[in-house]
Image (cartoon, rainbow, N blue to C red):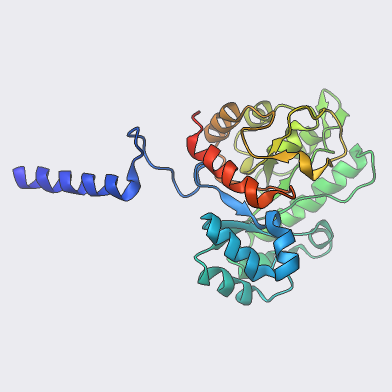
Length: 291
């Protein structure tokens, strides 16, 4: 018995020294927790445009990321992109694909998503005419239900990334409510981009709690202090995207609610021109924040 206790003690000490517990004695973050987020590769689009996708992947690795959300295969064959990521210890678990492709060829998109080894595949922007209205929302629901049926056949989960313009008033709620309640929960999940819920004047915590089980992933993005909220454009100056914790969002409340409702993946998406200096600040905030 003493030998067993000694062995267990040595194993525990080794685990702690390996980083399995923090200085406070808390369990180390899981591979998919906010403290160890993935990166939406769109954040490095400037680097990718100037020097190519491999340079963006190199930077993602240098930041310490291992999990990515991508945007399709970037004109490469899936196997080629997979090789580039594997060489750098990176894995894409999610991707955005264009609305027009989901609408015209959901099976083709699903096949590409499968070839990329994804768990989730979604749409970040539903093409529409302003103002977004009920008729357009119902068309979006039809497209997304078909998309979800196509991805389910290959074992991938479809999601829609709300972008802010969907919060037009409708009945006792908004058209965002219609998109969520009108789509098939067996086929369609949702990705919460915190800024694009917060900027239109909504409360991310309320939306997480209102539809538990529908939120499969989250974009971690903060809004600069002093920026007025309430616009339904789905657009704001990219310089209003600031490091987490320096903006207006109450992150402890948001992260606590996200954990409670079962959000699986958290991705940093930083659209600012200062992305290379801002991402390290965001990563430090996520390591330190308590909720």
